[in-house]
Length: 457
Image (cartoon, rainbow, N blue to C red; front, top):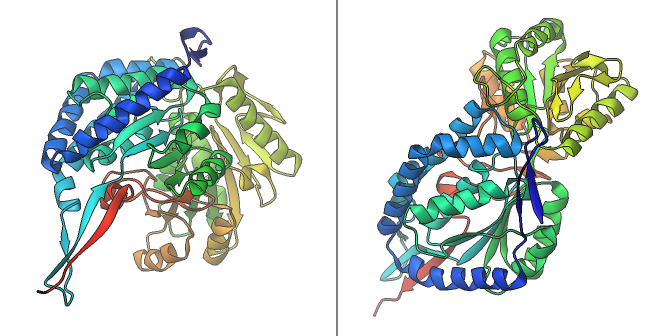
């Protein structure tokens, strides 16, 4: 049995019975059968279905937002925005998928040669709880339009969201088996992934989970895409718009209670402006209003689970023990916390070797790191095992053009908020994973890039 618990008040919302082996087998059979018919449809026919998904999401966004808020604690405003983003992504791919997947003619000495993009089959998606709808939809929308079918293993604390997403596809008219949720724990994943009917896997999660899933997929010679989080650097150079940088830094770090893979986690600031920037950051943090996530005036809700809140405290405490200074969110080594409700924590004097520098901090913990100059800032940003997103703040765009090429990350946002967007690829390097989601690149991750060569007669 699995339980979903409201993190704000710790009330049990619902319990779910785990899928039996017979149920898993039935869903695998359905997916296998559905793939034959779904992949035979034209891209235009599949995009028509996904347009309906977008409309359905927009019509019912409040209901689904309330479900997310109850299950994992994000503010209702953030939850509504998440559903809207999913709906917009349906429209984006419906508008562009036909062009993305069109046959590509290649000039050779053949009579005719071209590349065609064909789906692989059932794809297993192992997804986390922090963006219960968006994480799933950014895989499912392009994957289904490309002709694949989806099998979702969602995080157990958001099984309500998993079933709701299945409902969305069903109510939008997609045939049975094109998208199914598996209500299972991690122990059932290996057998499912090894099943011959499952052709590929995508995972968003921890480095440890990614290594395990990639190992299994590799042993079966199956394609995998991994997004494993990060310790994203936000670099502030001396010529930056400091007020705007501080505002966006805090927004990036504290949105979704800091539970975002691509949040700005390490603020790296040139020494000459660090004092001023620190004051601005503290001022921005003071404006955050914590409380009931269903209250429209609340700007930051609780963390999703008690153990996650415990871990953020551990990382902060261990860093303080090594010389970091707590400048917001508590006193000494004590933190302002009630259950899953953790006040924003700001640490100064953070250096390599501290948990807050070396590890992914998945919660409302921001850190200040001093850099001697721009070269030192880039060095510190790259001194990480992760490489998902990053940000660079400078008003010299010629300098920015030079420095973005030195930052080791899957994306760099100059003078703006780090985020995912359907129009551009999303993913990382190093232990942040491999492969890309979204954009034209993402829709082609789970297709057979087939060469066709027609010889001259």
